[in-house]
Amino acid sequence: MHTLSEENYLKCIYRLWQDKGQKITPTAIAESLGNNPASVVDMIRKLTDKQLIAYDKKKGVELTVQGQKDATLIVRRHRLWEVFLLEKLGYHWDEIHDIAEELEHIKDASLADRLDKFLGFPEYDPHGDPIPKANGKMAKRFSTTLADVKTGGSCRVVAVKDTTSQFLQYLQKLDINIGTKIQLIEKIPFDSSLVISINGNEHKTVSQKFGESLLIDNS
Amino acid sequence: MHTLSEENYLKCIYRLWQDKGQKITPTAIAESLGNNPASVVDMIRKLTDKQLIAYDKKKGVELTVQGQKDATLIVRRHRLWEVFLLEKLGYHWDEIHDIAEELEHIKDASLADRLDKFLGFPEYDPHGDPIPKANGKMAKRFSTTLADVKTGGSCRVVAVKDTTSQFLQYLQKLDINIGTKIQLIEKIPFDSSLVISINGNEHKTVSQKFGESLLIDNS
DNA sequence: AAATAAAATTTGGTAAGGCTAATTTTATTT
DNA sequence: AAATAAAATTAGCCTTACCAAATTTTATTT
Ligand SMILES: [Mn+2]
Ligand SMILES: [Mn+2]
Ligand SMILES: [Mn+2]
Ligand SMILES: [Mn+2]
Image: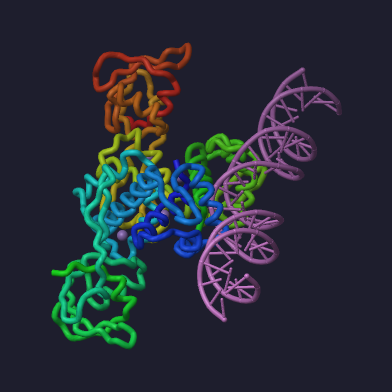
């Protein structure tokens, strides 16, 4: 099996791969994990030896079939634990990520499946991310952000791209949750700030970064 | 906070202290953890520096007040997770110990208390060990074993002293659980084997080691 | 095509937590 | 009281996973 560190690298590579679909460089991994590039190079060698990734200076880092399988399972465990923490233990959605970051590494062959069943086979985690099934398949992952909405358009929040408590607490303050309806009133040309109406209420202005962190469904 | 290794040492020392109440030596700790005595000496220095234990060649290792507090919390988490795994996820009692051994190290200030509440504030874990309360207090710990019962006497199983799956599966095979009634028919003088009747059924013979691993209540 | 900047890699270290083998201290026998 | 055995400790190494600094490779400008 994999060490805690190996698992965190795997999951990180998996996320970078999903997020952009573009070349994954040692620097990108280093930044994402808050590690030194030198450490990343070490781990790339290690994961390559274990046949979990393939590295080519041209194509960057890629997960092998086995690497994808293993990464998916870690993500599955992470998201299932998040559901458990929120629904069963009553945590708020800005508290669960860090705890799940530890829980996802608990090793037991049947734990994820049992937890899945206990939770009623949820499709999405509390941040709107799809939970991989036991077979590795998972529901659709949304990709349109609030920043992509046309002026005047309406949409519904389906997921958050950023799970830091700073962002989630800001959302709480604005009374935005998964399912909240948002109308884009105006896009400020100067800095792409967005003027929005939350659930039909008074206008509020949010940054471009904010808009790019909210995944929405046009409806 | 403490590392995973520090926590496992703390818990080990706590258990040795409860089990016998006698002098805790580096060798005893090494044996209990399956580590080399040299490693134990290193860790004793580390835990002493952190003021979690006090070590005196005459008195052996002792937990400080802080060490006791911290060890108790780890035990609390371990036993609460065991209840969760058995009652909510449907594991058998011989599977839960090893998983709880990992879960007990998840660090979050309110996790144990939330889990405790979710489980309905259980008093004992599935092996019959008392679960420390949030304030550190806990229900009575039983100490009489089946080997202490007088010939002809009857008793009820209240806890197991050994949580290895070898022992627990043997108990399962004999149809012995927490609460099972056992009568001591005869004690073989030669090797202290015990002839018992489980729930009034036909006589079976078990070893002295077996008898010493079952905690009972005379009733 | 050079020059420069950025990214990747190598080299040499550190800290934690293990180990074995050797040594010293403490207990137990004779 | 010696001799012997057992326990504790020290010394020296190993692996994992990180780091900083130096170097090499690759990209980007000029
Ligand atoms: Mn993690
Ligand atoms: Mn999530
Ligand atoms: Mn443990
Ligand atoms: Mn237990």
